[in-house]
Amino acid sequence: MTGPTGPVGPGADRLLGAEADGEEQAIEAALRPKDLGEFVGQERVREQLDLVLRAARQRGATADHVLLSGAPGLGKTTLSMIIAAEMGAPIRITSGPAIQHAGDLAAILSSLTEGEVLFLDEIHRMSRPAEEMLYMAMEDFRVDVIVGKGPGATAIPLELPPFTLVGATTRAGLLPPPLRDRFGFTGHMEFYGAPELERVIHRSARLLDVEIDAEGAIEIAGRSRGTPRIANRLLRRVRDYAQVKADGVITQEIASRALAVYDVDGRGLDRLDRAVLTALLKLFGGGPVGLSTLAVAVGEERETVEEVAEPFLVREGLLARTPRGRVGTPAAWAHLGLTPPQGTGSGGVQSGLFDG
Ligand SMILES: Nc1ncnc2c1ncn2[C@@H]1O[C@H](COP(=O)(O)OP(=O)(O)OP(=O)(O)O)[C@@H](O)[C@H]1O
Image (cartoon, rainbow, N blue to C red):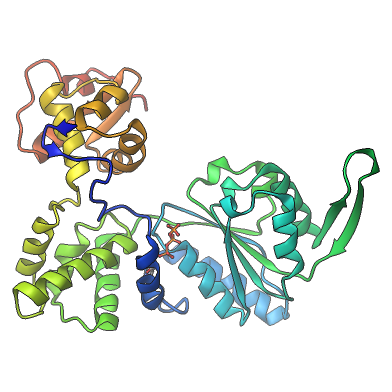
C-alpha cells in the first residue's frame, strides 16, 4: 500500500530503530565502553553503581542484584558487562524470552560460579514459573527442583553459589512487585543529551579510525534520538558516505548530506515517522484519528505505528495520544512546514483533548 509520502512498507528502513540486529551486535561489542570511567553520561546511575560496587569489593562480597530500566540502546547490556568487569567476575548473558520453563532457569542457575554476574535481558518477559523460581534464587541462593509430576512430585532443594543478577527491562512498571523488591539497586537510564551523544560519537570515531570535526559530531548527535546505539549507527553510515563521496573526513556538511540520503531529517525523524505525521496532518487535518485508520493510511501494521513510530513522535511533542484518537500538535505542523486548517486539527489540542 502507498502512504501519502510514497510506499513505506513493512520493511521500512529502520536506520533509527533502537534494536540491534545480528551484524550490528559484533560492531557494538567493539564500541562498548569497558569500565565506568569510559561510560558516557548517566551520571546518577554511574555514581550510585560505583558506590554499590566499591562497597561490595571492600567487603569482599558479591554485589547486590541490580535492575536497569530504560529504552533500548541506552547501554543496559554495556553496563552489565562493566559491572562484571569491575567485580572481576565472569558474566553469563541470557534473556527472559529464552527462559520459557523453570527448568531452563534451574539449569543456568545451577551452573553459575561464585560471584558470577547473570545478565537477564527483557526480564519482564520471563515465564511465570521461572519468575517464581528466581525469587527464591535471588533471596536465598537456593532453588527447589521439582522431580516427577502430580501427587508424587517432590521438591529437591539445590544450593546456589552467591551471584549477582543484573536484570534489564524497558518497562520497570511491568515487573511484579515481589521481583522488583528483590533488587538491591535500581538504575533508571535516561535518554542522552546532545553533548553526551557528541562524546559517544567522538569516542566511537576514534575507535573506528574515522576523522570527524566538532560540527560533524553535533550534526549526527542532533539526529540520534537521545540513543547511543543510533548515534553509533548513524556515524557508520555517514562514514560510508564520507569515504565514497568525499575525502573521508566527516564535517557538518558531509553529515547533513549523508543523512539526507538515508532519509533522516534534522530532528531525527525517518521515513516512517514522517509518513505517519504527514498522513495525520494532510489526510486527517491533524486528527483526532484512530490508530487503525492511521496505520492503513501509511500501509503499516497498527503495532508498527504504535510501537515503532509513535513513542518518538510523542516524546518529541509532535503527536498526542488522546481518548478520541491521535492528534498532531502545533509543533508537528511547524516541523513539516504546513499550515493547520482553521478551527480543526491542532485545534483539538487547544480544546483540551490531551489525555494527560
Ligand atoms: N554510555 C555509553 N557510552 C558509550 N557508548 C554507549 C553508552 N551506552 C551505550 N553505548 C553504545 O551503544 C550501543 C548499545 O548499547 P547496549 O547494547 O548496551 O544497549 P542496551 O540498553 O542494552 O540495548 P538493548 O536493551 O536493546 O539490548 C553499544 O554499542 C554501546 O557501545
